[in-house]
Image 1 (cartoon, helix red, strand yellow):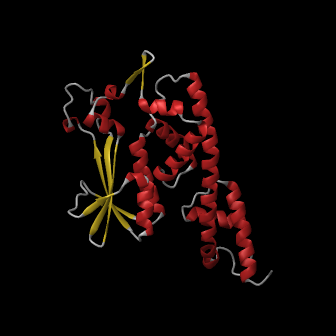
Image 2 (cartoon, rainbow, N blue to C red):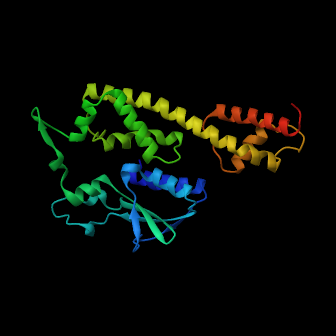
Image 3 (cartoon, rainbow, N blue to C red):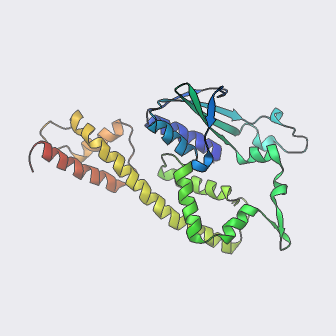
Length: 272
């Protein structure tokens, strides 16, 4: 399974392809005059949307993988991190000024600052991560809102198959490691948050997908995928979307688009 940094890289590439943004890969993105993105305003997704809204059509990406020589491994087992993505930088230039986003793996930050044991605090004769305590203390509704905000800020052009991996990354950011046993009561709480948040995420995905499909209707009519005065078949519409590399994840959105397409054709042909 891909880790958080690999998923981020995949998301950047997918987002760029879908929005006609070209990628230039570099070993570095340093520039004399540059500004780094404030993550309090959102994650990589927000950064790239901001770039797109600013008319940016080209970005530079630097991907740095972990090597043993990056740090002293005499007291730390570095083998499990070797070859993993440690840092990702994204940058674009506008009016001779660079705008940069930096992300690094959680484990890389920890190795560069302190050992994970330094984060642990004693609580009732057992060690509990402070972030895990946040999950214990927060209400289910608050955690649902946290997850929705995480998906909005950190996840780009989400597809159905990516929901589970991003949910797992959300909990990892909260200090929950599913590789270890979890208290049953806490597990029930997490499961409920996942269920309720997933419903809202999928509903939003359906809405976003539908909006994108509606914007394609003028192009479908202009390219005349059917005969100029004849009705376009549903199969022709599906083939058109497939040829354009557009995957529709919600079947009802195809039905909705098709019905709206027929209405628009009738209006243009003055067959009300």
